[in-house]
Each structure stands twice: as C-alpha cells, then as structure tokens.
Length: 113
Length: 117
Image (tube, rainbow over all chains, first blue to last red; front, top):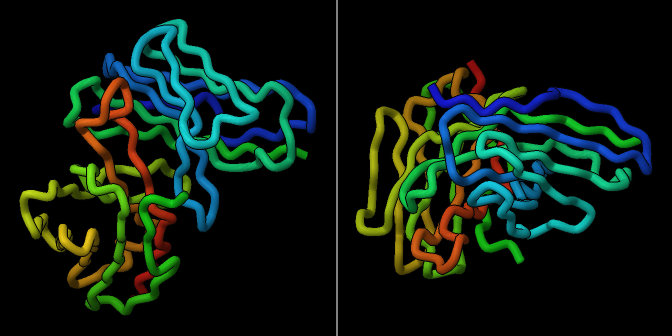
C-alpha cells in the first residue's frame, strides 16, 4: 500500500512562529503536493514539486515556502505563522506519469493562536 | 477563480436513497475527472475517475455521469448507506498541460454527505 505520512496530526503554534510541516512518501513518487483544506473552499494547491530541489507555486503560495532535499520528503514552511493560516494541511504524492492518481496523507490540523 | 464548482455543499439522504453531487468546470483542456472520498480524520482517497471519451463509468454503487458539451459531471451513489457518510470532492486535471503542470488537480468545494439509517 502507498503510504503518505504527515509528521503531525495536530499542531498549535503562536503568531509569528516559524512552522515546519513534514511529509514523507514511500512509493518513490516524483510529484509531491501541499494542499490547504478549508470549509466551503475545497482543497487549494499551495506548492508542488516534480523532482528533488524543484518546486513550483500553486494557487495560494503567499506566506509559505517549501523544501525538497530528498525524493521521499517534502516540507511546508510557514515563515511567520498568522491566524489566517489556521487550516487543515494535506500532503499528496503521485508518479511523474501523466495518468496516475494522487495519494494523500491523513492531514495536519494547524491552529495559529 | 474557482475553475471547478461543486454543489450542493451538504446533502442528507435516507438509507437506501440515491445521493447526487454535481460539478461544473470551465477549462475545456481538463481531461481527467476524479472523485475523492474523505472520512473524518483521514485524507482524501480516490473513489472513481472518468475521462471525457466516455459518458458514464460505474463501479459498484458509484457512478460518474459526464456531459462534455455542458462541461458538467456528477457522482451518483445508489442505495446510499450510513458508511457512505463522508465529504466528497470532485476534481479535474489537464494531463497534457505543458511543463510540469500536468500533475495538478483542481478541486471543487466539497460536499458533506450524511446518510441517515
């Protein structure tokens, strides 16, 4: 079974803190994605990576950065957390082939106070 | 700009009834339309997917209907069960997008389905 593992299920951080969300996949997938899930807005793409050290902005990259130093690991970084970044964060991965499905992690619910 | 619009936001159905969730898209380059199912505390998981060369795809109690000319597709859950209670997301992807964008999924807003026993 494909496994996408996010390091934390729940996080509570203070405004202004630097926050790291970690994601690891065990299927040797080329593509990795970070989405944000908010009620009524669905899933919105923050950043994605198609190879080690490669990244591209998604639809809502402002206030976020990412790092992919190894193929299996993709990190989302909130440089200075703000209350409007309180949300559910979902990591996903897929093969680089154009016709494959994306597999999601269980999500990290981040609360910024 | 919301490229995939999903309705309704929430849906309550009695056990044994039919659940119908609708999605409409704008980008005619989309060529892959998956539906994801998400249970509380879990990440979304692929439920069923369709490509625009067919008008319908059925897997068990789940059916996708696709109308290319109207740019709409829908999920039908026959004989709905309490275990189907979850959030459902439609999505779309342009598999032929240039550069590295081909893997990007655009999601609808989600539908919270509750099936009463």
